[in-house]
Length: 270
Length: 312
Image (tube, rainbow over all chains, first blue to last red; front, side):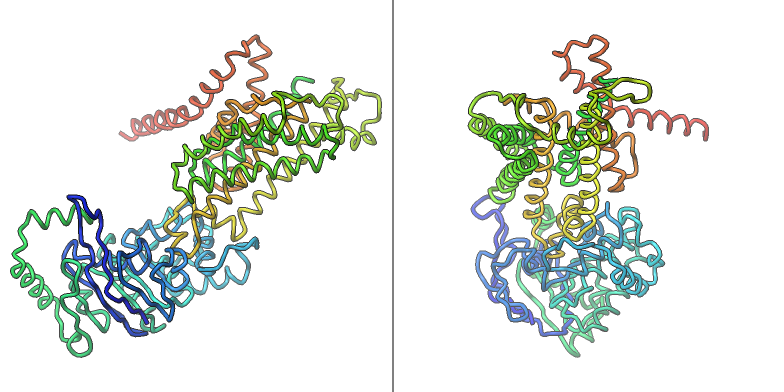
């Protein structure tokens, strides 16, 4: 279970560029729940994921995960509990190393690297078996450097790596945003397959209203560093892409957010 | 022939420096300036211990350990105190100059009347070459001492290369390589990248100090100035090796450094033989590195332009 309690983070505090990225966020995610996070540009949804992953430490607030208070844990220490797939397909794998070497690291995630042979026979067999589930024909290319693969293939491997050892929490940060439509669809299928099969607790940020409407069992909408909408159960299942878009329009009107402010926020975050 | 043996030996010894630079510069993309200091440190520690009667093997190993520590300092400066890579290297290198003077107690130490690894190598090879002082090699008279030292160095360097290759295939070694390749991924897999960089720099400077210890014992003296400009020598081997052996595979890259170092040393020996002023050596070194950096790019752009022309 993930429990975020009144978490706040301000970037560039005390300067003209000050951004209150997250303001008093509280969020509880039950075990096995698949939460989809949407929001306007600069609403703090990616920041929320980074806060959980430990890319930065909070100004105030607390994070509990799987019974551990991880608020002040470093990024690499949290990785014992957390699997991540990034927006950039190049972020999740080491391009100069082979598929097998990358997977070997994921197989031992969270343990201090030993002075033992990295690629044993058992591991290679397991690699082949697991890669076969991606149905991309990569199981015979374990010795290929990852840098030569397509974005979709790399993202599929990153997903496999993030879930190789069952994570207490899976973080997906717009992990299909940089892919072509067909690859994106394939990655979403895989994501859904892996998450449902293993009943993984998942936080997924997306820009696609289609994905937001069709995936997961709970939907969170963020705006200006706060959660403005949180629907689950039957309410979540009723949401259609058009409803969500209408929601965004409503927000925009209510806040009377003018374009120049939106532009400023975008520059801060992209 | 003696000149050839000598330059091959020095080329081999300095290939360890090349391997050290390869680790910091290529694997971690860390421009580590510590090299100039740690190679002298290796020489200084080895010389002082040898003069005080420590066995050559123990002295060489201690020198390597001293290099490890120097690398550790640079690594900690960078990862724990968040100092820029270049600056942390420069800081350690500068500090090491005084440390080396302290270690030696004077600016140079002669090992003329001391038992060194070179003597050990000669004694080990006596059963094969006899005690005549000279042997016939491919029709040339060469000193047994030179030949034994060359063979021993070759063995030692090949062994180091093999160990290094095996190490970089272990979990720890793989994670180190990944740290240079994509630190974000390594953190996401739960490993402290700062620790990997620190350990990597320690390994790198350990090798460089080993190179310094061997060099000191080969040339029979240690000098506080011997490290100046050595980083560029290491870089030259790495870059020449890289332009010769393409493909980026680990084993090939290690061989490349070895070949690069030997080739570069031979080039220098030939240039000196044909009357190059030793004062110009560093300039020539810099030009060689420049050539090795730029020429492959020019050549490939030339050939691709020609290919393009043919297609059009």
